[in-house]
Amino acid sequence: MNNRSLLKTIYCLLFLTATISQLRAQSLPDKKDVLDVMRLTNKYFMNTWPDAGKPIVTNRERPSNIWTRGVYYEGLMELYRIDPKKKHRKSYYNYAVQWGEKHKWGLRSGTARERQNADDQTCGQTYIDLYLIDKKEERIKDIKTAIDGMVASERVDDWWWIDALQMAMPVFVRLGELYNEPKYYDKMYQIYNYTKTKHGGNGLWNPADKLWWRDKDFVPPYKEPNGEDCYWSRGNGWVVAALVRTLQKLPKTDPHYNEYLQDYKDMLAALIPIQRQDGYWNVSLHDPNNFGGKELTGTSLFVYGMAWGINNGLIDRATYLPVLTKAWNVMTKEGVHPNGFLGYVQGTGKEPKDGQPVSYTSKPDFEDYGLGCFLLAGSEVYKLK
Image (cartoon, rainbow, N blue to C red; front, side, top):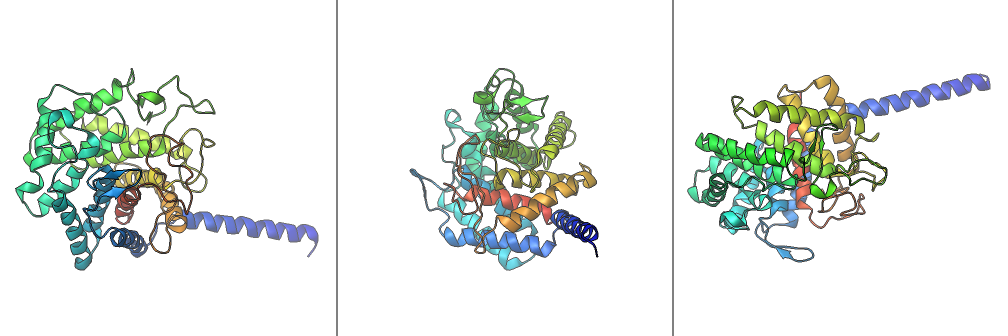
């Protein structure tokens, strides 16, 4: 074999290897593997925090019913719904009930209207889920009182940061479903629409790019170092999750259902061309050089949204399945430690520079919400056929 033939053979082998690697990255994971990694990561967390009511200490002490833990329990309840083993479901349920009981099913901010904050209402999603399993009124008394106060109020400017959509919208829609009461849906839309079209001047939604600015600090003329708008990955991930968890429960007859659905579809379409080559999304969606790198939370929330859309026949499977499976496969391959700890989780904040550096071994200030995002993603990936 001459040198030219040898080189040709080598190039063909390299191309074949790259092609096989790419196909593997985009192949649908086995259900058992998905469940195993969800159990592993959750076991690590439950073993690390056996007392669900123990305060969280970082730069200061906080109660464990804050938003970070609330997001974890959102994910845990989705794992509860899909895990076929009764013993596992029982442990998840008991762990969630312990959390509610330790906080007397209350909100960190209490129930007074003037103290309401979407972050402190996140726990209500799980309280309502647990109430539906065992209808003890104390489980939903406080969250219902808090949201009723908002419904009765004329204020519509509560959700001035986009994270708030995920923290609160699912609570409104769950109460609406539970009580068959459209007033919750109506108020939810009023606040959502104000966030979308008013906050920061003309709203936090950019209809041109189909993405959201995190809050008024990032609307133009604010720019990233490369001159692009700042679209924070996890912030947009929160909106994707909010829309998923709203559309799950909202009646299709609601006058605003189609608007939520269109916003959801527009966001997912905008995410496809900006996915990293390795499968993740950068923390700055339009500036890969501003703290660019692998990041698990925003990526997990995008996977959650895409997998849910396929499972419910709302988006094109052929278009989105390769995108989400590539992301899920790389997260499980590169982001999960042997003991279940999750790497590549950006710490709390609101923009690319916060919680840096993000790496396989870096430990965020709170590790609960990262797992919550991952479990949400896994719960829908598990259902894919």
